[in-house]
Amino acid sequence: MSRLGIALFGVGRIGQVHLENLVFSNKVDIRWLVDVKEVHPGIQTASQQLRLGDETHITTPDDIDKVLSDKRVDVVLVCTITPTHEEIIRKALNAGKHVFCEKPLALTLEAVKKCYEEAEKCKKVLFCGLNRRFHDQLFAIYTKVKQGDLGQVRIVRMTSRDQHPPKNYLQNNRGGILFDMGIHDLDYICWLIGKRPLSVSAFGATSPESPDDYRELNENDSAVAILKFPDNIIAYCEVTHGSCYGYEQTVEPV
Image 1 (spheres, helix red, strand yellow):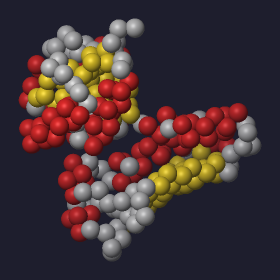
Image 2 (cartoon, rainbow, N blue to C red; image 1 turned 45 degrees about the vertical axis):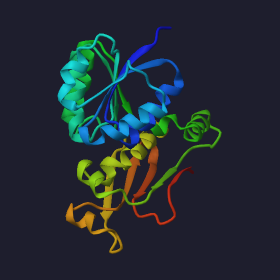
Image 3 (cartoon, rainbow, N blue to C red; image 1 turned 135 degrees about the vertical axis):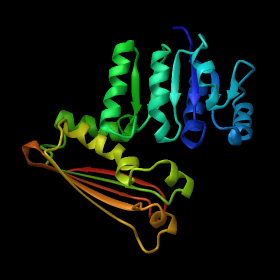
């Protein structure tokens, strides 16, 4: 199997996670690392640590046409801030590249549909990075449910807790905590149950102890969604940025 050439757009926290995984897979060649000039020193440090050679070039988003015209690039990874996803996706597809994009693909349902329509028209793969499905333990739960090992599921409770992100993260990933953080959980719940919900109720709140960043940006630090599915299955999704003890991810099919 021939090695794939990769162009990575966005080399921040999640971008560097993907970069390390790609390098250690030993199945790809990193051709381009694309991000704003302010973070280039950090990208250069990461490149040196991962022993990327002269075949890997670092550039800015202004050079997108140059990057996409590179015939050595087979796949584009999009790990930039959410508002930039749609433009990069559509340009990459039309340049003949397959695309992996961090969630969400775009800011509206209509824009997401257009991205997939573009991929179908260009006959290229467009894959959205909703990673809960690929977590070993969460996949094991999914397998047990599908095999009937846990009986008939009546309720699914899913909890995601994390600490407060920096203000620039909140500024660049607008849309609310359920849209940004809860999207992983909602995708997993629908996948686990195997059906779309009939109704959804959601509630958000901001704790008095939260940083002022949330109130300035009119964002919530915690939210709950309750979903009613066919066959009288109920799902409860809780997400919060206010966990004082760190990260937690829990799934309970009952």
